[in-house]
Image (cartoon, rainbow, N blue to C red; front, side, top):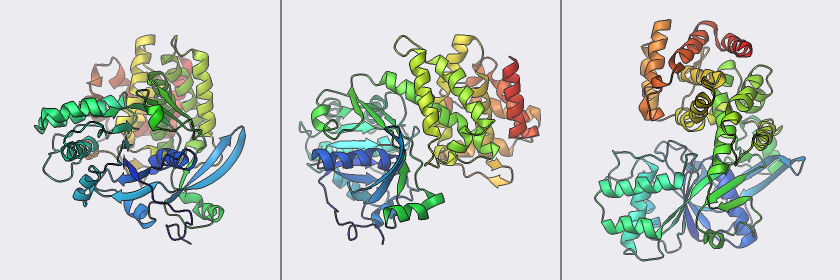
Length: 492
């Protein structure tokens, strides 16, 4: 039996009050799962219009085929016990590919019921694209699409008060709501839209800074037969998630009236400042994930759990967390003891016995992720200690090597922005593997300001440290290079 509205006896069509940019595993297992909770337990009565953010997206057709229905399987530690649970999510009522249905996409803007915008387009998603035009069909960037939608709403309702939207981005960049609003206002200026529109954006729309926290491995390809047997039907969009979750939303007090999170019993914090929560989570959990991926994957491992439990790679990532990331976060607001306790919980979550969290699912847009998640720890560590954090530097070296696109004889399916993939393709094709050539390659990567927002060649000692590690990886292989690295760090 296939999951669809004919086979799901409790299928319900909700008023479409939410437009959601993204249809991937995380949004469905995190945001949509919570929307369903609010619908079921707090009469939120809100449906979701899912928008495909990328032209090459492959998820939306599968979601459409199941009438927006999918199953979230929660697997992990709950109240001290290992627990499995599953539930059908019924809140997605419409799916739109704006690249093929742009008129239908703009039509959503004219809905009186529309109230929320939610997104997760990865860290690279909230960015200005100078090639986006107002009257050229579907814009490529998420902020470009959202500007077009908001402008359509502004025109249709003639700037009427009370017709603005609550925008809740989930991308893991600092002050994501503020950054998104700034880019929208920049598009308004570049597109020469009315000043009244910019004023309406400022006064009638609410942009929230947020923090999201839940590990979502996604589709359980390794044990889908077992999962299908457990849930009792076939679901091509089933998504596996850990039990733990946290959503911190910074915004005005009226959000408590708009989002019935308390009534639904959700672990959502509506706060005045998301900063302390964000920095701890992004640096420790996400930073550890991003630092782990290239080292563990090149080593021959495939999942987070086997990497953390591995004798060598596990030691490496624990030292990254406790020796190099945690010390950069200690402050009066967040003491070391609290950070260590949080780090302990992260290691426990990484070892979740139910979840197969594939390293390659974390590898999407790894360059922008390293810039936002790990580079601040590198620079802060250097500032505090007067030397580079050697393990994080090794991880960056491994990441650059990862973008060579080879794990032994196996081709790595890299997934990043086209300009980054083309950049790496060119520099690796022109590298003959000599130490001199590898040093030039590292210099080019560190100078790529589109990634780093600065020339990292100016960071004392960084180019030579990365080059040394990459030379070892190239000449000796990742296993021997990591062994040498760990032994060298111990001697220091």
